[in-house]
Length: 608
Image (cartoon, rainbow, N blue to C red; front, side, top):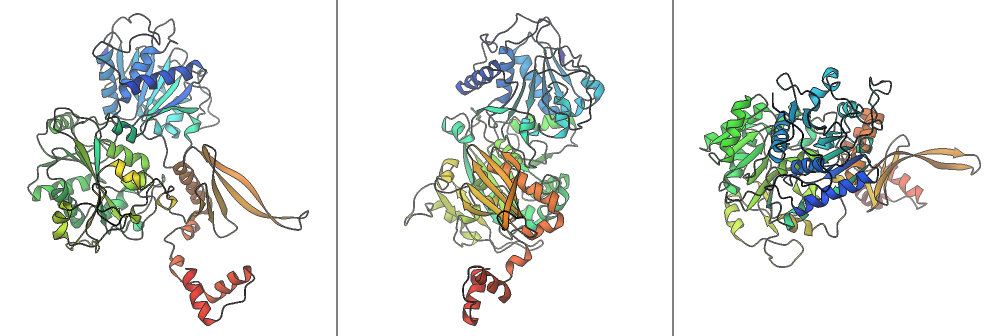
């Protein structure tokens, strides 16, 4: 058992030192702690903090706990809820280093059983779901709850736990009666990505996000390293991949597209062509079979690529990560193991070989490489991802879409694969100018498609010198809703989007102040007006456009079912021309003369 038991030192207040003399908080960390304490002083009890990967969230919440003035007479007793064994160990070790006089325990599995009385207990939510393990923690004797990776907090499993400690967080089973009446102790969530892809409202757990700092700010202030970006356009045909319950790609279905000899060969060749000089490359795959296959592909090219999966022995995993941190080998391949909580600062290249529709997952993946790493020679991190060129499955994340840009609007020129190295030496081209400008977009070659078993003749490289340069193209652009949804939303203006379909289905997504509102409109006959009018009701509200779109899409799928495919961008009927009857009906609506044969052909083209 991981346990350090000793007498609790003097009671700490918000003015007390945040740690031993060796711990010096960064300015934004001090600012974050102050904001949290101010809101708690004002009576808030469920607050969230948004800090990007690499910002030191663990150090912040441990320091925050040390300053909370609401410690009870019985002494300090706090719980940190995490979602993995690795995060539990990291948090416990960090607390021990910062405050040696604290008693620190881990509640996880059969090997780590906490007493329930420690100053600082780290528990995995999976273990706490066991009623007997949860019962050890009296909600009236706990001073604070910290939720790490808090974007998971709206899930039913988390709400089962949190309802034990806070009366305003409802248990997913409305008929559930807690054995002990919960209190209102502070519940504080920390996450790099405070949004949920499945549309569940984080408002069911948190009252407000009290502090936010984004990646660009952190890079500008040199708290995170600079980033180089390369998107590789290939023919993936992702619209054939099935989706899971959260709206992301099904693992088994995605593996059939990504884990092929040709795609694995392409990933290796991309690395050799663009990142072979990188000392520490981390690659994310779809599943275990994909990890093994890609590792073998690297080895065929003479590259020392090693891998770890959820089945890797704990000691072997520790040795492997230690060797990777020491830069003993250049490529480490994993699937879903190092997405969250991995602290490997020397990573200087990240390859996303598993497309995802989840902003959270993608942000966590690329965040693995953004930490500063003094003394290792790391200057920046090279992010390489793969963008589908066919059928354009909506919502697939890439570096451009993460920042709200449609990656397919970045036009490129055709060049052979053999010319790529020569192209890389030439000045990049600004798409909006008449002459070359440095450090903008590098144009590679156009993809002719990739079919398993065939050697691709060419691929597309779309390079950006930095995140700052990429965001230059966003200044006069709105968020591309097509990149967020599979459905054919129509953008009326930057604050209003409408989805209209069969059976009187009409949904409006409108920005109102600082939030987004999604309403459904239903036509009804009004006797007073003597005509049809629209009645509306609110489906949901959300803090961001992404959450509003994902929530609306989830409602559509649940209520409309299989017929919702007719509303998709890629629905087969959209590829057909309008019939003569449809064209005449449109013309009649606008009280115009029905078109003749020549006009009919023109209108068919225009209404496709």
